[in-house]
Image 1 (cartoon, each protein chain N blue to C red):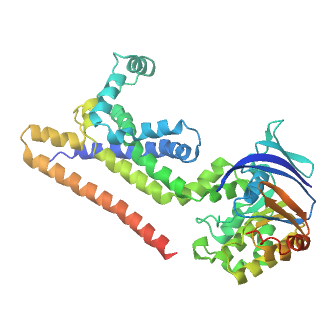
Image 2 (image 1 turned 120 degrees about the vertical axis):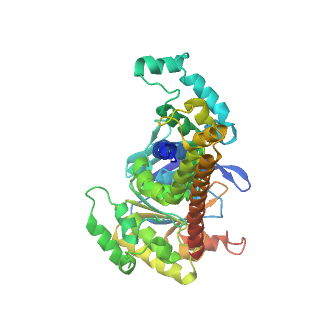
Image 3 (image 1 turned 135 degrees about the vertical axis):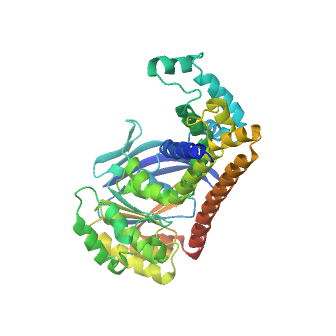
Length: 225
Length: 233
């Protein structure tokens, strides 16, 4: 009987990561889109790092940071009673960093494509930054938000290196689908690995096709105007 | 009513230049700001609206200081009591025509004003439409109505008609005159269309090289320019 626990864990991790990333990503995207400070290019580069960095590099540093032998890990352990190495919360933190650009970049470019006059009109109509963000900007970049959420979700499902470094392979805790595939192959259990892989493949394809379909519909709508 | 003495460095197509403006505008006036593209007309409106910060100077409206460089005072656009219509359509695409107007209401604002404007600017038939489904002229009528919902003291029009065809322009000009008179507004209109100036304004400020080159009735400016110089464009 095939064990579906890794998929449940993967979906749980991706869902939590996506929700948290939305909350973290919108303010970062807003700041990157509208700030005129020079320091923002550094933040932009930092946010984009996970795209080019081997996941093992990110995983290595996170492992060091989370380890109770080091200052940050020890502080978390002693004062907060939080252990992040080989635990599910540790995976969530790692996934947040790993998938951050996939949430931030679409929303940022959505903001940048909106005419600046929308924001300025809202200001001259007496609305502050928060009201303008919630009632004018966000509703008009909703396609970018959908894209960001789907990409962050899909990217988290596909992560492997970071999870392996930070989470290891603990069933029910950190053994997500990609790890389970690797594990089954190591154990020469090709049938299970094949089924797991096929499920991930189809799922990822459907997710990406959905994103492109949304963008396609949006573009045709714009052209009709 | 408006006292404006400001300086600001601007980036124009022919390089940087210094905008140096010193004007007084009385309550109830409809003044046209005229000049070639990139002469700083829009910047003056944006500084009045609080969307652009002058390098130095003072702006006060009705005796109330809005900007004072020396006192480091810069009232944000939200508290400046202006209505502004932008050159590019700035309607909120996610709201209907009525929604755009109601967005402008403050808490406990005057809902009757929305109804009145829907009638005066003849938008009632379009009130449930989204901006995507409106023509250019209709969009700018909505933008004009929306700018007036809060009953501003100052109406700032930044080339609102430049993207419209001749007939649409004529109609919108009627609306502008009607609203200006009916609501007792002080209005500043940025334009580079001279017939429009002649039709709407009794006073014209001509900008050139970053400062006001002429200030007076539009007819006099025209005769003064005579045949010696082509009309500014």
